[in-house]
Amino acid sequence: MQRALVGLLVFVFAVLVLALPPGAEAKPRPRPTPTPTPTVRPTPTPTATPNPTPTATPTPTATPTPSPSATPTSVDGIDVSYHQGTIDWSQVAASGKRFAFVRATAGTLTADTEYARNRAGARLAGLSVGSYHFGNPDTAPNDASNEASWFLQNATIASGDLIPVLDLEVSNGLDPATLTAWAQAWLSQVSGATGVRPIVYTSPNFWSTSMADTDWFARNGYTVLWIANWTTASGPTVPAGNWGGSGWAFWQHSSTGAVAGVVGPVDLDRFNGSSLPAALFVP
Image (cartoon, rainbow, N blue to C red; front, side, top):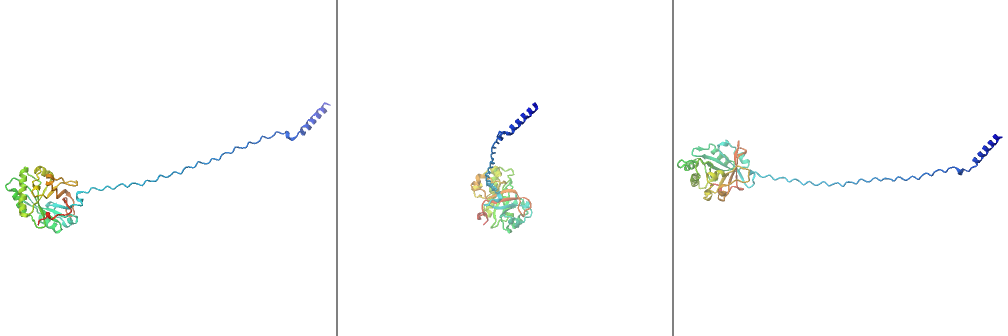
């Protein structure tokens, strides 16, 4: 009996469960709406503004300081003696040299062995030529006169030549007063014989010391100065108050020049002007 009752109860419970409506099922949880992921736009890389390439300022080309031999307002030349040996004067002329001073004599005993050849060769090549005497003063009686006579005897001073030169660069112990008198005597005698006042060749130091820097010669007609001052400066040092205000006419600016046609070093000279004036030539 009890078993029948229990079975009946189980049957009734099952019927009741099956009779429940479907709405009694648990409702599903709604799915959350997903939060949209924002689209990240890439930050644009700014385009760099190119810096303009600066225009390079050209470095100015330095203008070279002209050497003495390159001065455009001068006339170039050389002076020579037997020390230069045999000279090819056509090459000297082709190198741009326009004049030459040639040693004729020294003292009272020396006649330059290359004088005649140098004078003739330079003239043939078209150079203006002058003759010079190397003064060798001493205290012998009439020494200045004897040296002047020796020069006049051996040198050729012709019309069209450059006026002659006294090369005064040694004192041989003579004091300034005695040496000044010696130079005055030599110049006076040669001037009287040739009709022109010779050129004086000297150096600034010699004239300032051995000649006491006298301006007598510049003030008394010997106005043409040939100054020996070996320097690369733009001009020489001129003694005797700028040679009495006359300045220099010829400048020996080097003793070690190189010139085509001359073997070994040679003295380089220049005239202070664009051309040699008529006053520098023997009439």
